[in-house]
Length: 168
Image (cartoon, rainbow, N blue to C red; front, top):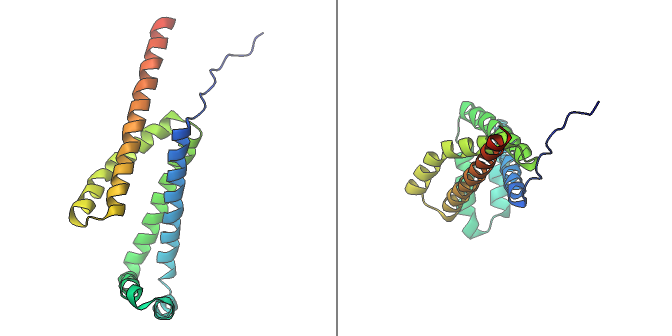
């Protein structure tokens, strides 16, 4: 008796793998943010951070670094916990997306499109109220990923429908 015939999954495109690497980088950054938020819950960390800023920063950089430290250390413990947990949850989402995209899974393409589109209004709001090059680049890259994945899903969906019709 012959073994059942399973269609081989197509090899993920290089662009799909590049998107997966982008997701892994974002996940790594968010893990660092989450760990940093939880570290700031320790009272001695805030004082150490201020000391490092004073010792390492040049005069021109010192103002920016001091502002970042005061912003981070000025958060209440509850907000730091929420920031840390949120960063870890978001990193988990990016990791799931990345693994699925790396393996060429269709569900990961859908998940990435949906998750990315859910955050577009927030990104547009951020760009509109506090425009910066990194924010604008992030918005453009996320929209380009969505456009690519939607086109890819439509092509593969259309190909699957013509195969189904031919088989019937």
